[in-house]
Length: 437
Image: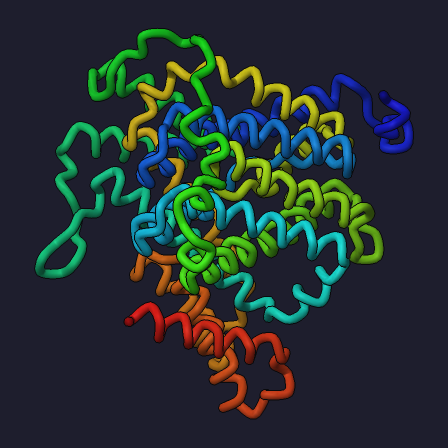
């Protein structure tokens, strides 16, 4: 085992790998409860999604450990789950079963792209500024959802939104959760988001804002309500009814966000661990294959896109250097399936702080955008601002991809725009035309 993972070469041992794997798990364990809460808004069974989330994280992370041998964990991605529920199912009215099919298809396309080896070609076609803007915009969107769920921000007939009733016990609990999580993250506590949720839930139970759980450990819930649901549309609809232009744009958005989020996360985490050599990541194809496979497997199980987690950096900071740490993290996700009774205490007041803080972290990508160049600032701004204001990640990406070629041509930089961007300009214009019919 230690020879396969090259413990001696990388200067590590079982103790460091186990501690690193445990640290990564604690840093991202919040997804076990946040993901079911978000996907439940799409009409999915919360307990089944809990199991699907844990299994997708475990399987994806173990594949990453065994195949790519990197200490990088995977789980259903934040942002993509919000896009799944609020933009696709609620916004476009696409059944959640069909949306899962879209996730599955995006994973299959990702696998093909990875195996064919055209990853670099696609990465180079999309300007870096739009990638950063998409990440930051998703962060703003997630934070907005968190503020809404906590009822810190509510609907207003006069101004669309306004501050809610901050005296409401559930809202006060969410505000407490934000403050305590901010403190934990500020002092650098690894797993601060997870511990923030735990503390918030305990305080909620003490003050009777949320119910006392009937148990802590219980039998693993049935995954039947979501397992294989991605293929149900084939039994009730024709191919023309399934693969509408709306669904094709959804698949493209799932693919786009997962593709660049994964690439960015892999390189960032791998660079921290010292794996990147000459600006290249060894076994990058295997890592991307593990990620794309996990997405399709997760869709079959019943969850939104599974992707690499930046929280893996906490495990690396704790000493993890090999895929053995990923196996430890994956095993812990399997053990965590026994704690489903705790879903009862993970209300929106408990999950909202996690959404807001994750939004803060993702919005950090704004700093990588060159705001001094107007032709860059305009498409980046439209990408970011449109996501929370239209309640759609796809709309934000579409507007950004439309504005970028326009501003670059107007600036006299048309030759710097990749031909694929002009093709996407036409596709997204047609998307808005058909969307308005």
